[in-house]
Length: 485
Image (tube, rainbow, N blue to C red; front, side, top):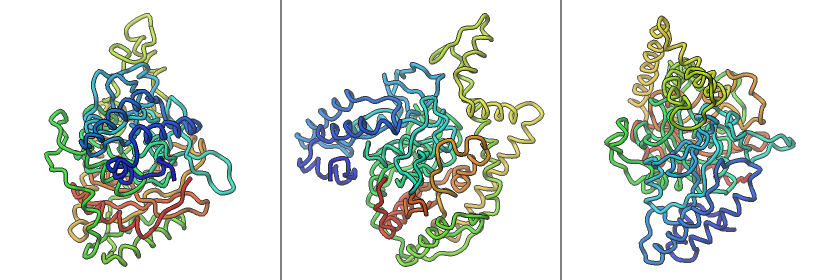
């Protein structure tokens, strides 16, 4: 087993015991990154920064001054602003943009001693469920379907993060989740993805998609590694008005709690028509595993689930159309000349935004327009409250909710690009909790008939990530998922 096979927890212990060097660990990952370029997981590689970070970590380790992530090589989703390093959000319109500031989440990672390997590819402005909308080309899932040579998508929008973690190019990665963009790619790549409670992690310095939904979280290879990363990423930030004044618990310590005595809800509305048999079987296995560990499972109802996707695809584009108005070619990024100022705006936005982003801006502008605001946007916000109330009512009787993460396993690159509605259905199990602002985690629990990873999703109460991690650890141990791409 080489250094890139270690988990974050294992590497942390070896680094602190001085049986592994931070520079050695960084070099092993830089080599893995170079050998896996066919995946197109990175937009920007930062080997010089990685070597400098590792050297500094080595010095602190030698002095016995190790911090929480001292010497751990990480990848950063290209939605997080990184000071002086190209930040693209997967879009042509941010050509050449090097932020003069650092996002709060990444700043906290560097202050904890993490080593930066580079910026990871993603769907343009986090809009997508396949990582097919990036200006820098699609990311390839390191997994392959048995008997099928077609390259597969890694899920989206954090596909670069998930693929890099699964391929052992990075030990962990930052990601963001608006409607499922952490959990769905984690399910497609056999990794662990955590979408924390809205407000748990600062959004300051993260390129905005839909501000009332966006939330940062980690992707890692184990539940324990995800808990370690979230512990560093989380915390109140006075620079973000939506950041919660909530203490950050010891998520790693919560892993040992188990689920004995907990009540786990199984939402009947998530048993959709035509559900993949393998996914249904793994869902039933998850129920058995939790019951064997001492939990009680019972059916719950989330009656407004069927309205979640249409509600999401009104609210998210509306917020996107507002947020993306700032990209006009005047202050930063791409500028395409025109004879007048208006023509320069039009040329820049037409060339700078991809097809999916333009589609969502058009939808968002329409639902916010005079005469349609009440009919669409305001009504969607009311339905959102009903969806959130469903969870509130359910959590009066249960502590957690167990569902599949995604309705399918990974599909081939380009397979669903002609049908955006089919693509949107990838998030059918993750969107409701995003609208409610609740935390969720995806854990790899088995393989499909084609030999591809399938994840189970655990949803929790707001700011109760500790119970979420405890249940996820039980699922992880019971599933014993040891398959590799």
